[in-house]
Length: 113
Ligand code: 5GP
Ligand code: ZN
Image 1 (cartoon, rainbow, N blue to C red):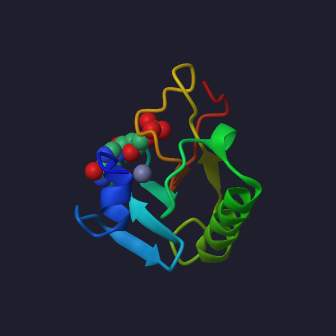
Image 2: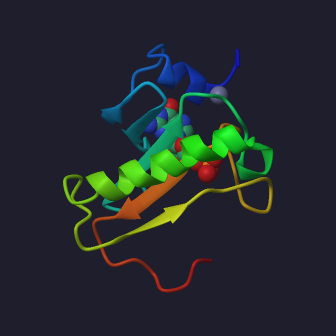
């Protein structure tokens, strides 16, 4: 997608602090962290949200979740974390390329909103 910031980050055209990369995903530090540790797991393939996934896209997202789980301790999230994927206006999605927020490094609020 020509004007998608996460496609550009995934392609290395815009710099980011990557903590993991393979052929189908990156995990980067959020530029404006909301918690002590705030990561974004981003499939390299462009699709807007969970509502726009094909079954094959869902398998990529599943592998993103798997990788987060496997890397959590190494990333400083051994005490726990929260996973969020915002969708649309009510979800306050600002970047229209699916991404999974990984929030942790501190005790989070009990309520989600
Ligand atoms: P959303 O609001 O779409 O759920 O989340 C988008 C996230 O992407 C925000 O937390 C925002 O801080 C992050 N973000 C936006 N632009 C950039 C960028 O250029 N680099 C990085 N690392 N994060 C970004
Ligand atoms: Zn994109």
